[in-house]
Image (tube, rainbow, N blue to C red; front, side, top):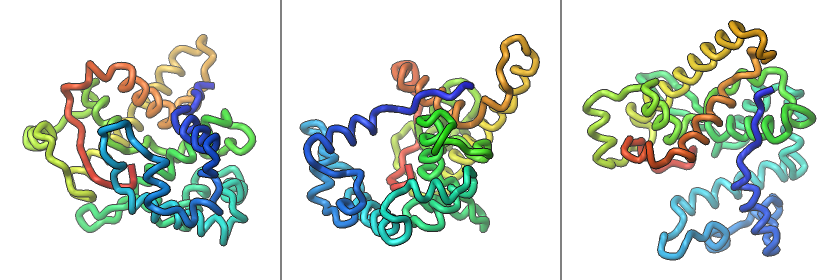
Length: 252
């Protein structure tokens, strides 16, 4: 299997706050969380200002807490069990019940969905549980890459994606895009398509080298996304000159 360990940064965050006596993973706590409380939990480094979109984050936590308590016995495990090992069904459970996960936009009259946070939630469960127990999904391939702002930057670095000159100029100027604008939708949508093509190509290469004893389907969009994300973190100096789109949003 090509499953990788999930990122530990959030676990350090949760561990730190629970050590301080803050039950941050308990919906009974965060269903009534305030901006002041969350501001302290998300306190940035000195001089870095306050956490962005704080009110929206509080609203999302309160909403998730209320739904978990009212419909799922206060635990997301109930959502996972209700999916019957189907990533697609779990995705629908998430976006149908939790409004703050409905990462959708209008594209020339068509409703398009990215569901980045919902998909990365499923991807993290799959990775952390190494595709067994709660992390076992029979259709994990339905999950796409997690369309945010950093992976497109890496795809640009590798030449897998190119921007038009006007768009490149806009991004290089540091202009903040409006959430749901055509440029943002196109960047995110193209990123998903590029990663799907990478997955297809890797699977073909695996079949060409049977001595590697790798199952072709062990490569999927989650694995490729994780590789690209880690590459960016390890090679941030190389990518510093490449622009990435900036959007104020709760979806990524």
